[in-house]
Image (cartoon, rainbow over all chains, first blue to last red; front, top):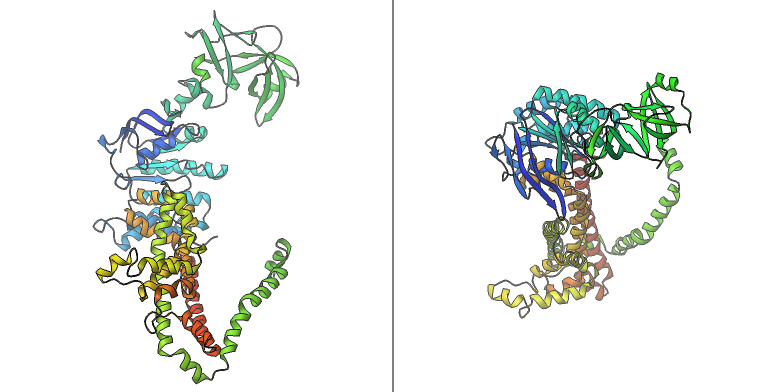
Length: 355
Length: 279
């Protein structure tokens, strides 16, 4: 089922959680709503589910207006951040819940319920815990049961609120690839909310970046990472160094130094330059670039990370380079060097200052 | 044995606390209760039997235990609704209502009895409207029930309230998203989660009602065989210096109350076991 939200606005008191959000979710896609906490992503998810009502705007399922439809009739599977498994029921009964509460005419018989629940438990690879209480399961298992329970009613849409938020790093990674496989098997239109960029980029077909109740960018994981549409997106995805200054004849004047612009793009007069840590080079001797002092040298596997601070106002910079380049450089702590960007993105300074 | 060792190591003072608990319980609860049975032992078995099965006594058991169970059941239903309203909604004056709940705890029971009688008597605020309809409350068993409902209410509200506060609305949302109607959600999700607390509240309200004296005697009218409660029979016997007779009736109350509370406790344990158990 395809979903469209149109002009959704939602206020909580004075706080604008969503302002005029319009979005399309294509059938069968796995879409991530990504953004910092308080950006409105969970609110949007809950509005799509019908757990929250928008102040303005419409929600359309397959081009049909579903704004007034009750959550019961929307046929959405919702997986809660803390799973919300019914504690007084066994795992089996939790999954069977959606079938048991169907109106008498549609309710399958006991044997059919049993068959369908066991099939779902097989799907999430947890048939062996059917008779246990949810309280006896680990976080990752609870998550999978919550998913099986949501799938039991054969939803048209699957909505997941921070699905891996409450799990430890290792389980999170495992479940992530497992969920991707499951989605490829089922092809249910799925939307999940996350604040973890790695999760969104790894898992989703499409990433929707949100900030302060607005959409910043929509695109494939590669698109949003390599071509950020705004300063916010650049800053939010991956780490970056920022330089603020005036642009004049191919140079950026910043921190009392001149930095040659690597590309000749049309740029604003006053600009913020974003540079990824691996696009910042360390050089010695005379030339352009920002003078900075080496503070710390960290080696992490095949990469080295250098933390520096600008000579002028001790603004922090981060440089990443392969380990063998580091030994060639022979840096020492406290040494003053030049930082030269080899690639950067420029944004108007007003926009960059806002996030 | 590993358990006992761990106990000593991690939670010291096991022997001390157990010793204190047993000594304290004996002094405050067990010794007086034993005295009740000792006192009755001056009666022969036949005398004892005659005392406890006297028609007046039998009628009073029916009234006391019947009205107490009914009052506790009514309180379970309306106490749950009250707790629900207090936890789930915010409305002007919520804090005041919340404070009012405890009033039956604090009020001297005689005061409660007198005010209830004044309201429900033939010429009282409510009684004057009910009387023409043929509904008599004061000086009838119904009056006893009203008094017992009044004093038992806080028990249910106060036991259910904290559990309800912990019950995240997420569970109800989950049920709704799975297609459950409001009624199904209540029946399958909310009530089962609250049931152990509800049962505790019921047991407490019941226990309190069985032992209630002060508020009931004013409104009951205390007509033998009709609206006379068992505690009153005990008091009456005491006033006639019939200590053995009084304690005989008292021992019946003790045993019946104990059995009923034990049944409720077992039911609770069973509910806890068949529901989710903590891992």
